[in-house]
Image 1: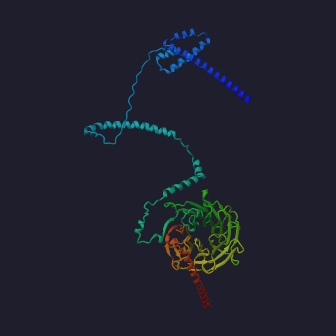
Image 2 (image 1 turned 120 degrees about the horizontal axis):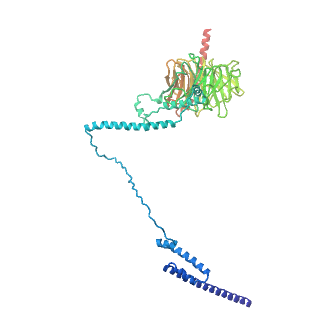
Image 3 (image 1 turned 90 degrees about the vertical axis):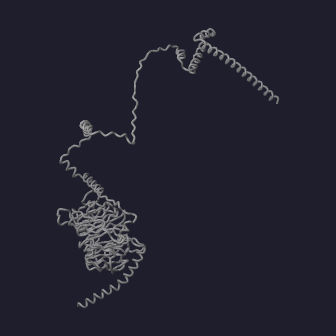
Length: 612
């Protein structure tokens, strides 16, 4: 403990010594600072009293050269600080720079600027100008005419100069020789440009809009006493080209599945124009009301008997010809001739092709064609040089001469064909029973058209199909029995074509040789058509085709004309119970068909016995 206390005492003494040393150093610093302040005050006061005497007095008090230099620098810095703080004046400038400024006289120039004129316009009534008298007018008239003439001459000169300068700026096109002009006109690029440009200009010119459409129903009030458009059909358009359609017959029609406004029509040869192509396919456009020329013109060296759009290739049109070739046109190529065609050989068709159709899906599709000698061929649209598959249609070792063909809905294997003998056959492309299966014998003349049921309903009616014939009747069939369910009589001429409605399960249309088009609704009446329209006067209607919506129908006649009709909504669109009513109608037809067929057989046997 004693050692610890001794050590603490030593540390306290040491701390007191350090404290005293620090206090002495602080006193010395304060004394030095006071002495320097006194010296600076003396220098400032001396500088304020006189200009140069203070410096000489300070030199006498300073003993060493070092103190002299230090005092000089301090005085210089203080003088500069004072000059910066004090306001600038001529006397202060002389003191700092130690130099006298030299002044002189300068020349003074005066200018005058006119004030800017402010022009203000007012729309209020201006002060009236007194009208000149007759004498003044006569005096001023010749003078004003002279001045106007001079002004016009002066204005024409700069205008002519400006026009000449603009003409010089425009690059002049080199003149082409006749050979160069012919080369450009015959080039493929110019042909594509000209066809595309003329089509666009024609569309723009023929565009028509009805600005008087009354959406309030005011037009319906004026038509109270008339038959409503919803209950009848009305003519929408008529297509006929004076050059291409003259002296030709419409042989086939198809409605584009990708572009609802496009219709393809096929024509046979023009016997009065032997130098023109024998076969023609015209593509018509419904979108433009005043456009009367076809959108595309496709040619072939043989009469085109059938035409169809490819539903999986919007730009491709396929035709079956009288020579047996199947030809393919592409609207992208801007060529009127086919881009592909099948060979004329024994491996393909050598007789007229009346039936073609494209079946399958987007990734797997085929072209099916049947010619008049009963040969069925399956083709790939990418290569028409050789068929993928062929089949000879025979029934009891007899060739079936096919006139028409149809496939049931969503079926690519089974098909139905009509023959020249008046017999209808069912068959299949693949499987154990490939070829002709059953025969439906009822028509007494060649079968001209076949149509399978396509309406999408809750009840399956895909087994139903219709046939038309030269025996002046249309027959309704089911694949479940070889006897017809019903025969629609009352025609006055050959029935050339028949088609089911794509939306109404009980509605179908037919055309005959007298130029009449009939609409049958078998849910309402099976003896009399629901509506009839006389399209032409004793000019045969060869074919017809429904639009996908079921609200329009197109038909073609023997004079090369196309007629597009709007079908009224009350006639074209089905009611909610149409499928159930059709099912009941079919059951009634089946019940009536059995005794009728038995009575017909008894009548024929009686006639045979009486003849004997």
